[in-house]
Amino acid sequence: MLSTGALRAHLLAARLAGPVATSREESLRSYRLFAARDPRVTLGLDPEWGWNERDLLRLMADKCGVSPDPAHVSGPDVIDPERTLAGLDALAARIQDVAARRGAVLFGTGHPHRLLAFYAALADALSAAGCDVLTPAQGRCVDITTRFGVRTYNLDYVRGVALVREPGARGPGSATGAHTHSPLPVRVALGAAAGLRGRLPDLVVGDHGWVCGAGQLGIEAVGLADTDDPALFVGEAEGRVSVAVPLDDAVRSDYYRPLTRYVLNRACLSQ
Image (cartoon, rainbow, N blue to C red; front, top):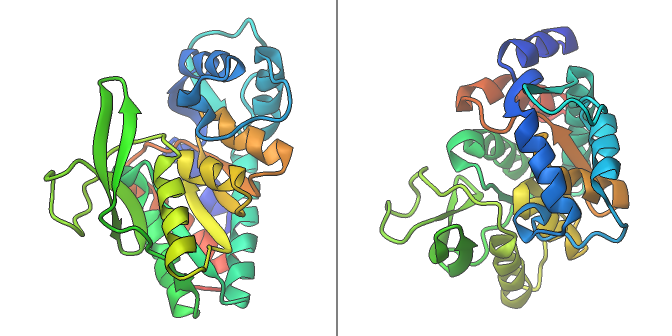
């Protein structure tokens, strides 16, 4: 059993919390873009409230522990490890609840190089507990707007976790996928789930557009978010995202393993 103290120490040592690699400049730029309703940072969420930059800074200070001082404009951003631990506890509670109900779960990530193993371990545990880990629309094409224009990606699943990859980049089932913030993949997956078997997920677990896109459509969604991803925390504040866990979402993949053990232990799903 990984203790809370040991995990807190790991969060700080791995820079998952405390001073993180995400810069203050990156975070403030995201808040400006979100306030302007730029789809690159709203991630499929259509905010109900009128969020300006100051509102977002106050929200992120409350949810993540970043500095609330608007005059603080440079250097590394900071995440309070206590808020990360609280978020992981809340995530574990939702995982435990869906396991108890043997519900249907959809996993998806826009950070396959970093977070695939974290989600895959949760998917394995929920599958072993009798949950239906959904894989709708596998192989379906998704047109996503990027800084290079509209590009076509294929939706694929690796160990029950959805990701997108460029056609021909690697064979189906390989762990290599594209980094994306787009909500379009989850919309395609949910549309296929509704049409094929009529069973939508009881819970979506992921990051970026997977969480916000699902939450916007009324599906319960939980996930991980960095300080430059205000959309998930806005969704949580407005009641469309159940849990947003603040942490650096782009450190080495193996640094998330203790978080996996912690969440599974808390959810009573240790294997």
